[in-house]
Length: 316
Image 1 (cartoon, helix red, strand yellow):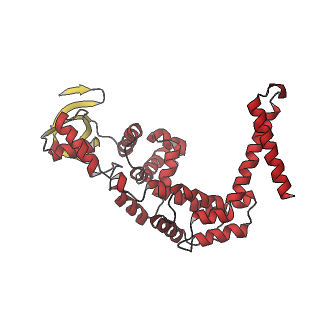
Image 2 (cartoon, helix red, strand yellow):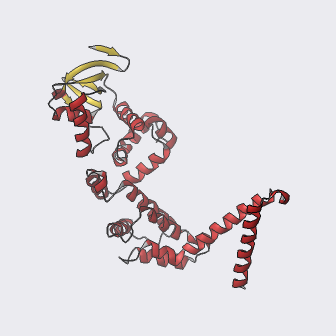
Image 3 (cartoon, helix red, strand yellow):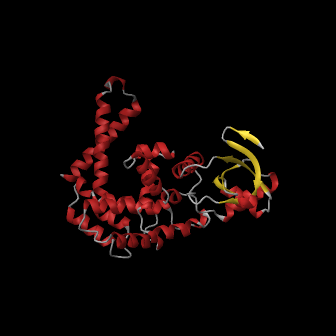
């Protein structure tokens, strides 16, 4: 038995190891396990697992996939770093920081444990931790924390739906964490901008989810347009027109986001984009010495002037 700065290194009985009940990771895809199992069969376990001892058993901190594969291969022992048993908060934070280094867990597995982290940190700090404090403790960037909160706030039936999907190989998954996050973002924007339009957010979520399953919406990113339609009054679209499109989107099964977008906000946002680009161009032109403009730039400016004149004449 050898000593290590991060624990005591030893070969321990595979049958005496138990999964960590606080491990955020709850999905282990068969294909990935089979690949790792074959690697272990050929080369052995190259990186020791990490455990702590509780009674006569060892509880995993890191390496559950390696342990599962070793059990399948009937390996009698497995190399492990035996560490001091951590406190509940230390246990969770240790696993979160391991994830931050490896980027292997599905986002939902983190999201389901985040409320427990917040609860334990609140007890330790005497107040609910901020995003900055959560990020520092868990090793997760703030954007990931916000995405996790959206998933942890989902009703359980959607979490269960997503968990079943995550068990499948990536290539066979129809529903994804990104899908639910985009739907949540869009609906929250609609609720803020048009509180009288969405009377039941669960019903609205079901409608948008079904449209994606039925391929009425075929691109996850399209859900961002729903929020833009709800805020389209900022680019000159009438409130009644925007509300009508959102209501239609949430009630008519075959009405797509693309149709709603084209009928309401597409042109207005395109015009705003043009204005923004023109403003940027005007600023740059003020900084240019006319005598130093090369021929290519001059030709493009002349073409721009001609097109602008044509548009203004057509509008007159």
